[in-house]
Length: 101
Image 1 (cartoon, rainbow, N blue to C red):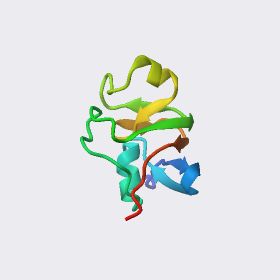
Image 2: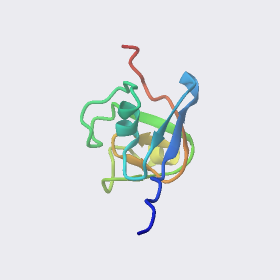
Image 3: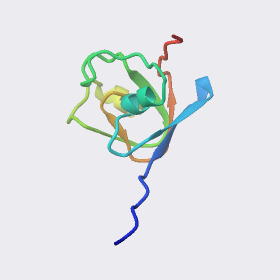
Image 4: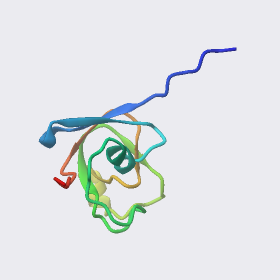
């Protein structure tokens, strides 16, 4: 029997809050933040309301839907929707609104 392979995780860093949390490749950034005990602003969780919109400073994501609720220009500028974005690498994320509660 082969030993179990460790689960691969990427690290999502929130420099403006001096926080970081693990995110599995099959997990959205929003879900991972919630699992880490953070309270990011969110509503629809399907890529349409834009409440969780934030900006990638570095890293890459893939989306669970074909075209999330971002304009072409917003995508070029590095904006993502955390509720439908899954990491392809470690991420530095800016402007993710966190509740202090």
